[in-house]
Image (cartoon, rainbow over all chains, first blue to last red; front, side, top):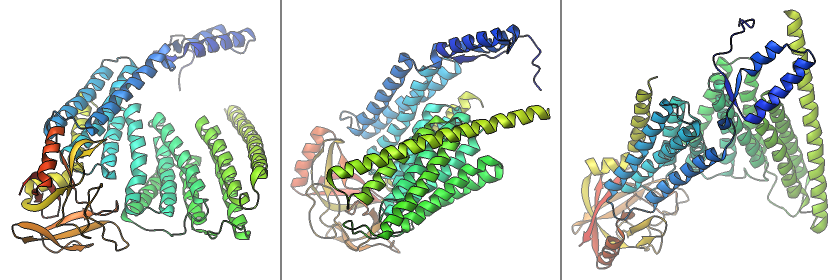
Length: 411
Length: 165
């Protein structure tokens, strides 16, 4: 147990933005004045934090990352646009030298504890440079640049960089290119509507499982995986609910099976190694995958001129499933203090409801009335969902307060 | 972990992944045998990728037509897409296509190709050159030329030279 009676200042202080520190100090003054905490406690709390301009998004940080992004993209573009004066091998050597310089430079700067935005910018150059090396090698050897495996290899290399150095920028580059590859590689074999739905669902299962596995290990990476999982789950159900998306059935390919198996193994690992309520995340994602596949397989015909009971049923079940997912994500976002999940769920639900209304009402309501109906549905969805979100947040806050009181009484 | 070691592991792994990405072409160049095939031009310049010669192989085309813009070896038109294997046979000092199959032939020589992007492509449809050389090569191709391919035992192919026939 930590000894809180010691008056010695903590060895490590957390950097926070100046406005946050000013807010904390004004609150501490208020709590001290009304007797909630003592002067000594207020001083100890205050000494845990220091003001640092880098703790917030500064102009310098934005410019550094923007500049690194431009240089990195320019590097790839230079390669793509073919450096006429150099032979293919000289071109490859030039690009590889630049990539290696950025990679080593970034780690040297990190080792010397240089400014974090500067280190991030150089690591961004190294991550983009890794892609430039892959594509330059491919171009030098006349490898077709449209093959998805090149993006997959780029992703694998930058993810390794991110994980070994615990750096966010290469990790994010690897995450984005990895998501691109996740869809491109199986669709390269079988461009099919249900394949997209299954890949989205399996991606949500994999990402949510990885988020749970990263909790308490690398929390910032867990945050990114959780955001990706929420987005993929929302898009999976949205896509599955598009009328007749699965009219061609499921086309099983090696890569699709690999994707589903990898997602399953990750979910199993999360359930086995992290028991408790948090397994609801991968389990919920598996439910989304199954429901999305079933809705996708439910075809109601391609005749858009008439709306029959099957069309109404399809739209109703889709809306119910989407509302359930949105509420689940809002609950997760509230429990995990993860605002992007809440916002994605709200925006996704409104867009989804509007899209479904359009699909159902457009054949029978036209012109100005269509806008009136859609607008009404839009407003009602937003109003009801916002109320539900507030009630949910309130209920969860009450629960956590009760739990705290119970634990306090137990002690 | 030591930062020097970590950086070394990242660099070595990323370079290995680059090698994996170009392994078929490296294998063709390093272990493949040489085959001469007749070749003609399609379109000398790609506005995005810069100067290169897009190559057309009249003796390897499936449908006998000639590319006008996109390089490729025609379409198989069997309702499927994926791997295509083009068996080669020698005629008058150059190699020509003998058969097209979805299954890998028992013995060679053959080209391992792909027709997911509508046309059959074998990784030999482009020949990158500086701008001035691209124009010269395009002129040579117009007068009749051969491409020297390196093809390994798995059908991976790479263009190593284009010259007048």
